[in-house]
Length: 483
Image 1 (cartoon, helix red, strand yellow):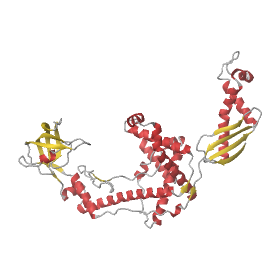
Image 2: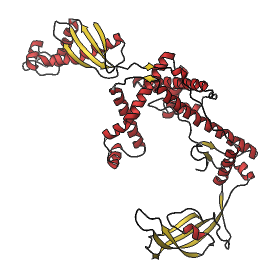
Image 3: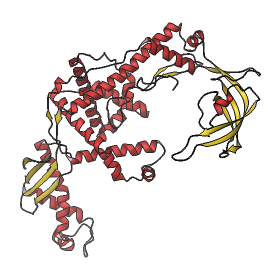
Image 4: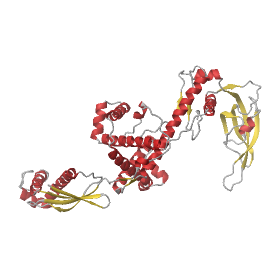
């Protein structure tokens, strides 16, 4: 077999392949033996018709097509192995000379993995910035915890509602105003003087009322566009009155199974610090990734982007299914087509492919390898998630080609981690040491093994079963542990 390869524009390679005449003859003989078993030839039992009779009956083209259907891909695969190219698409065959007694000649044009030109990625400088936890932050969390653990105690029969108290009441729309609201219902735990837009004026009316009292009041609904504001009349009857009581320091400490308030504060400080470091590390990694993308130049074959679009579309459909809906239902509700979705995903797909190619190129240059221990941990995590044997999961992943994909993604993750460390040091803000967490392995996606997302919340969980849970939200949004 003779093979030559020629690179052409668009990250394509043309393979010129020549094989001995015996390859053609053997392929035609094999095709004859296959076709003759499937065709009824008059005067012969199935599988017994001589070749020249079969050719007259079905035509020579049938045998030639049958032979080429198998031999062309076979010779192409050998050529790929010999030239060591990395195809990313199916080949297009042309200039095929396939004649009995003559050497096989053909050309195969295929898109290949493109070359990446790397700039000075080792000079990246990206500062690592983390928001310091202050005493005010900790005190704010303590306040949120008190609110989270607060209870509602009934007021005395003759005690009036103050602003901030709560009431269970019956509200009814009355005649009067510009219209009569269709409201006649029981409402639970409405805050006096608080926010409740469904019945305007209600919370203000509750202030000063007592259990068993009834009051009429008016409210104004906000105007819509050019419409005039609408006024309405209501009656409210107070059924029960409550006052919010927040826990004392002693109760707070007890509920959280701590020794004293200082221990509670120190625990919150540690968790807030860990959360902010996680968020800062993620933000830094994203900045490094963006900077790395600017350090590589690559011409991406359209087939690679289209394949990633299809993958993203598949995952989107799976998420819809998990939410008890379907892709068709989503398309019907949004008025979009599958092609519209693909266009929406195009930019993300192109960025994903570009990132992978550039990180792979850096990994090759740096001789980055994934430790077998890390791969084993991922496989074991899959086994735990599915409740299946580790060996079975490994075999399944290998058969589906998923294990190679996982290793590739883990390799990119390792490269990005090294670049992040390097970029932070260049900026004079070294990354803090990071201990590997067991739960990170559990978070590896079954389709990709990208970096696990850090938790969006830190939980302060009391050991006592009666204690309540406090969740700390990201500082960029709201750090109220009670949501």
